[in-house]
Image 1 (cartoon, rainbow, N blue to C red):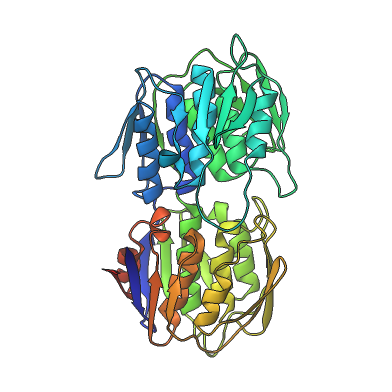
Image 2 (cartoon, one colour; image 1 turned 90 degrees about the vertical axis):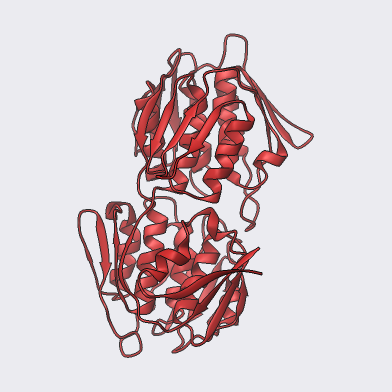
Length: 427
């Protein structure tokens, strides 16, 4: 098991290029199972989660590989199995995305209940509700979701996917994929509007699906008999881009994040304006301007997470890291995953003044953080701890970095390229 060792306080400056989106590519990889022809994905990130999904696809009987440039090649032309085992899917929640494609193509799917980051209960009832609306019979049996299509296959229907925590991104993805091969028309109401869902729809359209309404809460899918092969370029990872932007803001450094889509980060940039962090934006880049954090710290700014286009839950921990150095008191409220606060005590170990109150955390800015050993609990919490370690006095050790490898390509190399003193070692 590896850990990251960070010597804080080094000057950061330079450019980091954004990789392809993890949250976009995983459902698209699952969607490749809908076609018997080759599917090629360019700019796929080289991540542990991508390797895991490729392994699942191979276990199901398809060919799947990623070359040294990141391009993924998948071919599911032969017979594939409809059973994804616990050993295959236990590592990440997005593995449940194979449920819809397998059900649509084979008429039956057995997928083990998924694993992933441990920050509270995240049921898949929205997925199952949507598939049932398409005519499937679904049950939970021995830890597996068992779904069976009716005779003649899935049928189009009107599907409402709303929930108390807002639209489900993966739930929307699963139902959209299943509906592409259903008989008739499917209308999804309260669909997730995230860029990653749009990218999935664009990939499916390239494969021959008939989808309209991308980017809105209502998607219409006209079922087709089959999908063909395609080549698709994965969108930039807005969460990775936002993380590096916030790392530059926390350090008061001139850091440019290139090859991103600033339009996907509107809520973050709005809050950065409110926090008086200096930055500039171009067509495909965001650059934080150097400023003296000690003399003119960011202004404390409250954040509440919401579904897109609101502030992303996947940037909540990183924003909290920024607020540990802000001037005054800020309140961070988590509306998507109310228990996503396992980074709070670890930031406290670094000297942050943070206190949880139910679904909110109160952060009082402090002039200085100090290095300490900390434990990464999930993917985005890991990024927040690395950010804090970059500005903390002394040495910070971030343990269990396998979490961060799920969503960031060799984060230590990327940060070292702009001046960070960070290295990976085996424990």
